[in-house]
Length: 102
Image 1 (cartoon, helix red, strand yellow):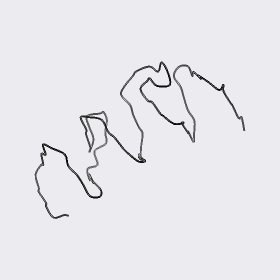
Image 2 (image 1 turned 180 degrees about the vertical axis):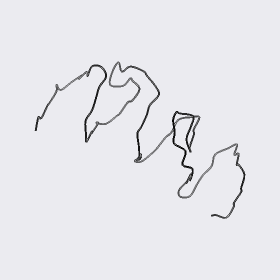
Image 3 (image 1 turned 60 degrees about the vertical axis):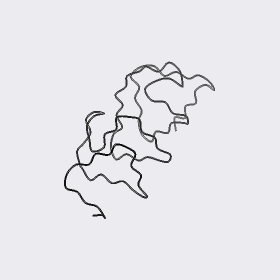
């Protein structure tokens, strides 16, 4: 419910600004980068934390060649609460490897 309600689609040629939240109530699961409730043709910039209720799937298959090149690039550390699986090699550039077997 809101000040303006429209039963059909909405096309906007310029930016949309919201004073608070933007809510999409669809329930379609995404099965690719072109399906789901929210589809963006461009990138996604998020200034603060993002939470996902299910899997994060990347379609890019670029092999990592350095800590700054690959399909997933993180400026900070990676924390994993459960198991991690790697399909190929693990490369450590500096400071060696520390393993705590508990």
